[in-house]
Amino acid sequence: MSAILEMTRQITNEVIAPMAAAVDAERRFPKESIEALGKAGLLGLLVPKELGGLGGDLTDLSAVTEIIAAACGSSAMCYLMHCCATAVVAAKATPDQAERYLKPIARGEKLGTLAFSETGTGAHFYSPEIKAVLEGDRFVLNGKKSFVTNGGEADFLIVITNASSPELGLDMIIVDTDAPGLRFEGEWEGIGLSGNNSIALHLEQVKVPATQLVGAEGDGMGLVFQVVAPTFILGVAGVNAGIARGAYETALRHAKARKYADGRSLAEIQAIQFYLSDMFGGVESASLFVRNAAAKAVRGDGDAILHVMQSKVLASEQAIRVTNLAMQVCGGQGYTKALPVERYLRDARAGAVMAPTTEVLKEWVGKSVAGVPLF
Ligand SMILES: Cc1cc2nc3c(=O)[nH]c(=O)nc-3n(C[C@H](O)[C@H](O)[C@H](O)COP(=O)(O)OP(=O)(O)OC[C@H]3O[C@@H](n4cnc5c(N)ncnc54)[C@H](O)[C@@H]3O)c2cc1C
Image (cartoon, rainbow, N blue to C red):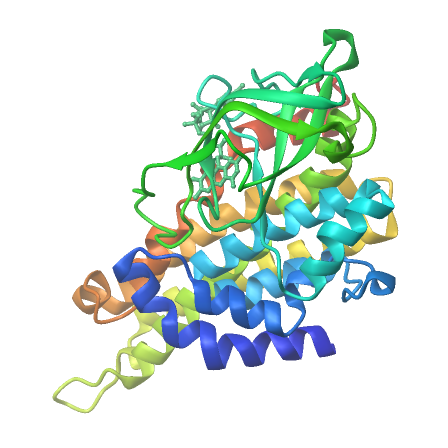
């Protein structure tokens, strides 16, 4: 195992796993997890080595999110959204942006996230309504974003907007969360990932220096498809493979430990063995598919994007299936908070509805294999 994965496993065992039930029950941001990951340098996983980061790639990211999510889905999701924001900055960082964002990220001092979704655009996050209005040497932003993970905790956001002139397309802008006119609102009320703090963001006359633009005006769409999509999709596929693995391992332990009065364990019952086989296959196939897709993306294989898109579909569907089976194996005890299976089941439901959603990805994969244009 690589040093990065070994370190992730150690932090997960020592810090993240012991907090997971409390993060879920108290619906609170997993501060301890993020701090521990930061201290170990893992917030800088995607920061180049020459800037003090770990210089990791998408195979590392999907494996790291899988390990964390097997213990705590909320921690994994918060970590992933930070890594997506980091990847955007790292893709086109100016020397000033590298100094003010990437180096502190590598030291574990800054947390980021993506502010993409809007209520008006829903799953089609690449069609925002917010516009970057250029006034002299700064952009002025007005509008509302929804579902901002790490909301209220992040130090900076990557905000996707329409460029100052419609013909330019989309922009991505780094916005510090202490900017005047920026405020978060509400509480995360989702059924799962209870600690991910995905809340609404209001931007009222927020003035951002033009130097905060990532790349040039109009680079936003390229960044969506070349940077955010592979990073988020493979990361969230890893999260879902991890949630499935956590549920499977919990169910397996329970099946071996639960004994009836005659001394037989649940694991000795054939119906339960069928479920265990089914779960084992589901977890391993999801995990392997994600790993293979990530390796293809890193190598730049011609068919990488197809595998990347399908990896989220597959891992999200397996997470829902496997967590459901795990609850069946654990019976009434699984339905209560005596076991973490009900948490895994709730957490597993998010992946399929996070954009790009399962429906959108299936359409894109189907069109790609059939040779039909995507748009
Ligand atoms: C836990 C969680 C964390 C999140 N974190 C972030 C974050 O950090 N930053 C961020 O920007 N966003 C985030 N999101 C938002 C997320 O990525 C989606 O944008 C959001 O969930 C879309 O929700 P909606 O209700 O508007 O979906 P809708 O767009 O209303 O979609 C509803 C359903 O219709 C389907 N559908 C819509 N259009 C089509 C189509 N053309 N073809 C087929 N089916 C279609 C969808 O697949 C979905 O099943 C998060 C969401 C969740 C659940």
